[in-house]
Amino acid sequence: MDNYILVVDDEARMRKLIKDFLVAKGFNILEAEDGEKALELFEENKYKINLILLDVMMPKLDGWSVLRQIRQESNIPIIMLTARGEEQDELFGFELGVDEYIAKPFSPKILVARVEAILKRINQNLKEIKEYGGIEIDKEGRTVKVEGKLVELSLREYELLTYLIENKNIALSRDKILNNVWNYDYYGDSRTIDSHIKKIRHKLGKKGKYIKTIRGIGYKFEIK
Image 1 (cartoon, one colour):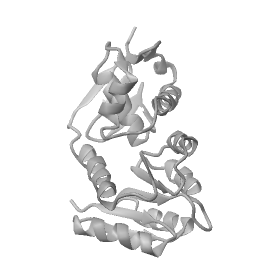
Image 2: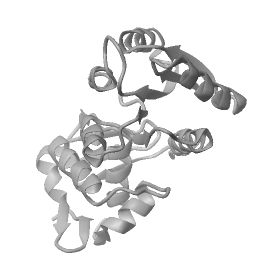
Image 3: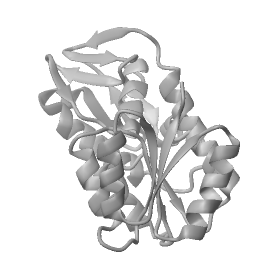
């Protein structure tokens, strides 16, 4: 299956750099130079785009605005690109549903590796549906339902929830969660996990209570 990636950046040189590396790996590229064009291309190609690389600082509509609008209707994986590497910006991005966050300048090879890792994880989902205390996980469709109602989760939220569920009744440290869900050298801190857990609990409603906070350690999924 062909993989299409939407590259959104107001710098033509940056778009070309990213495009050259991704095309060399067999990806098909769509380009947008601003937020408005990005939304236009997304609406026209939403059923074939597999991933979005989205710059933060852009004319017309910035990356955050584009992200918010796309998240209203899609869980497509989104990697944010930004020249600002402040931790607060990163946490803000995760709150809005970012799956990866890469600060400029970055190695194009690392960017390609992250893109490939995300798409590989999606394509490896098993064809099975399992139910846990009213929470239904469809791995093929990468969807979560609570008592039959679809819950909109970002890719990272989905992977974190399924990791907790697959290790139910086991207290998992924040470091272990980072190593297994953010499965590359991650230089953030535990607040990234805490931010994701908060959002997942909220989205699960009453079922959010299944995610227990283990003081001084991390979290545990437990149905009681």
